[in-house]
Image 1 (cartoon, rainbow, N blue to C red):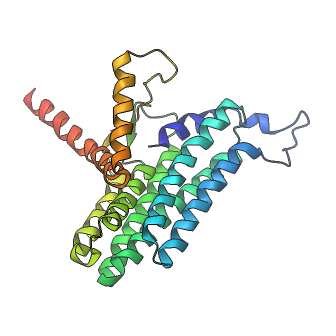
Image 2: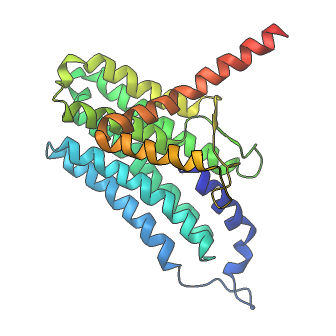
Image 3: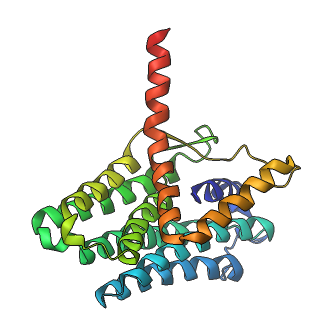
Amino acid sequence: MTDQHKHDSKEQEQADSSCDADVKGKPHKGVYLLPNLFTTGGLFSGFYAVVAAMDGRFEAAAIAIFVAMVLDGLDGRVARMTNTQSPFGAEYDSLSDMVSFGVAPALVAFTWALGDLGKLGWFAAFLYVAGTALRLARFNTQIGSVDKRYFIGLPSPAAAAAVAGLIWVSTAFEIDPDDIVYLVALYVALAGVLMVSNVLYYSFKDVDFRGKVPFIILAAIVLVIAVISISPPLFLWVLFVVYACSGPVLWLLRRKRHIAK
């Protein structure tokens, strides 16, 4: 769910793009190191996921995608904290996302299960990859023109986590992918469709993480972390599946209220 961090950073990058030229109007020759290190780490994690899947180490591949998601959330935050936003960083981040949250989950899923379905398998995988590319392109062109409280379509990191979580939990509980291969194809394809849908997803951007909150909120966060620690693959997967389903459910509720009026 890290699109929310990039939304702020890319807006700032566009506003501060003039800062990337010196007094004489000449562009800087260098790039900011710190935020791009996190982006490179996310890119490497996505690449590692593909290599691990080719080696048959699907649990490691799934974990690598989750690591990429964490690093992707940090690069924008670090850039804002250190005032090191740049157009280069924004473009590099999008290309890294395409690898880590588009190509990597699709190829890991294809190697794990979808390859046995032939054309149907690669169609489902390609639908996911195309959905990610379209989702990222739309996100980049809509910065500053949509309600910050919501994302239009399922964010690509959340979609990648939902796919990787399924692979991780299936591997951890020794579920044979051949038994659920058609469900996997449908699941991956739906993730791709949700990314390009017009369904709204809550972005959590109106939550003030730096402000004071009631004690019960902190206790609830501690409880959630404790529950996840019991079985990380299971509860992380459930968490992102619930988030992926929240968009269509809220859409149905809004539509029902609209019809009732």
